[in-house]
Amino acid sequence: CMREAYAHEKNLGFTRQAPDLRHIVIVGGSGQMGQLFGRMLRLSGYDVHSLDRDDWDRADELLSDAGMVLVSVPIQDTVSVIERLPTLPDDCLLVDLTSTKAGPMAAMLAAHPGPVLGLHPMFGPDVDNLAKQVVAYVPGRDPEASTWLLEQIRLWGARLHQVSAADHDHAMGLIQAQRHFATFADGLHLIREDRSLDELLALSSPIYRLELIMIGRLFGQNPELYADIIMSSPDNLALIERYHDRFAEALEILRAGDREAFIARFREIGEWFGPHAGRFRAESQSLLAHADAQR
Ligand code: NAD
Image (cartoon, rainbow, N blue to C red):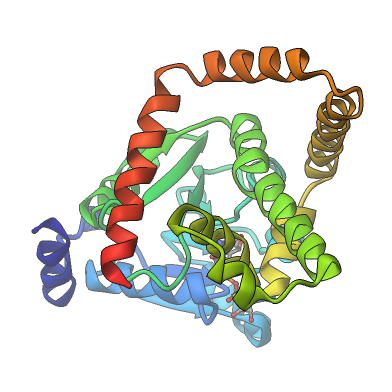
């Protein structure tokens, strides 16, 4: 199986795609994603150093001859850390892993006249390997200088998807910030209604259990991470405000008891989803069958 093949390769290492690259510095290399990328890059034969919070007195020494600098610090510190970087070699590739792209891309392009690439790994630090994971990338400057890195990531098993910074941030707002915020509001609603969760689960057939799982799983994770994802940009607030307006619009249909309007909107949304609506239904059914067998 493909996953096993990658797990195996992980132990052996990967072919190095840039044989002549000078050393790599990961700013925030002791963090979760910094460690993951450090491990993958070392397994691919690169010389990787970390510059973390307390290492700035060594910044010049570490960075003055770097072949690549990878910024992987908390979202809210990213722009200031990029601005704080000393002058990098002209040919040094400056890359970041930030979950938002517009701010970090602008900061990297302003801070460094050489090659720039934005990455956003669409997974957390707890993955075993990168097989089938998605990495979004935003070309910054001199794309040829980062071809090797994209090839390297492909070799790790990930699927790459090119996107502009603005499109990335809007899509992430919808996929992550607004979804997570709606889940946060669902959680708030549940605690205010305060029914026994055990009773709710006892009354839930598999699909409803899955719906509860999708809410509850959020609250087993790091609240700081979700605060950052949701609050990382003012665009997210604007997006969530539009969501709030649409909730009010939907509620108005309910208040008016307008069954016909509800059905008309329902059909309209179904048309927007098109053939995916049926596909999603089939996919969720097979997920449920699988989940049920696992329990
Ligand atoms: P983390 O908190 O685990 O690691 C951040 C690291 O940066 C820490 O080691 C910290 O000491 C260091 N750091 C903080 N300020 C610094 C400074 N001024 N100078 C140098 N180092 C400093 O965070 P993480 O989860 O690894 O996230 C890092 C980046 O990866 C973020 O941009 C985040 O958006 C992105 N990302 C995270 C995930 C995820 O699920 N964790 C997923 C995709 C992308």
